[in-house]
Image 1 (cartoon, rainbow, N blue to C red):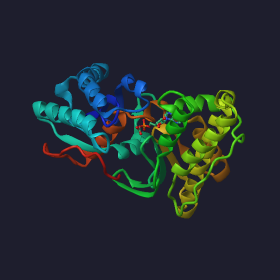
Image 2: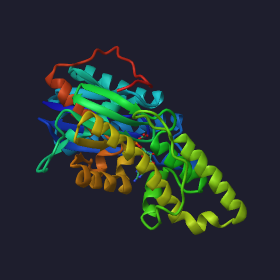
Image 3: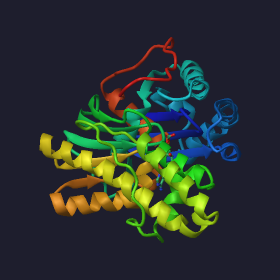
Image 4: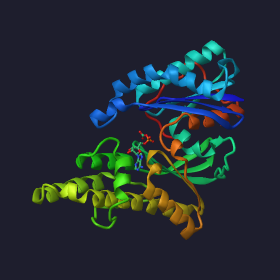
Length: 337
Ligand code: KG4
């Protein structure tokens, strides 16, 4: 079984090859063009995907030492994501599958993030979570607690009612005049700051749901007042602001996750998505493992942001169930897991 995975849901063009469950290659072309705009510009993203898709797939196949004709199936991200970006990957997958006369496997991008924990590399000491497990999926577009009963049986038990955690970090970073995406910058600066230096609003939301818009507004309004009395306030306090912001967001995320784990009596807990690269969040997971007896699953950095390895991984699961799709499946921009 040799699966080619293709991912193009946002601003990363990625292709990966998995053979008999082992990852042979995972090639990603990121798009620096968006940095100047402080966010992803959809039209520029789809154009860059068009430029990148052929060399990225070609590179992934060469790196894996696999000929096109050896492929068993093509797994592709059908959604959710930016429509123009998705169309490039979906159309390419259809064209290649038709020319090779092999089946296509549609993949939900969010399921891909959750199942990234199953990606296995040669010689890897690999520990995949057993079912059922909980997964905290945190990215620029999502903040969800997912109950994963099987690879194809996932339930969102909690989600943000407004902004995603990554979106809040990126926006706060923007108001501090820092670059895009803000997450890695905030992470780096937070290491040198005091996490208790500043307090920001915390949401009072029921059940396992999240909210980050109040925190974002509180950050903005506080900053506006502080800068009004000292124009150099941000420059002088950047590290403390970042550390306090990160601390508050991680605390909000972990509190609901703890509640879910306790209520459902689940001790296998995973984290996925772009924000799972965050140092403070990773440390919080390790602390929870010690304190609450959790077994935690933290992805390698390469599988935190968008990548095709996770798409090919879902493809492997679905291939075994002969869960193929027809050529007429369009991309979708919005859908739950
Ligand atoms: O999953 P992802 O690559 O894709 C989208 O959702 O688009 O997540 C991107 C998000 C961005 O908000 C980015 O700022 C955040 O992940 N991120 C981080 C870190 N690295 C990326 N947030 C906090 N700390 C990081 N080290």
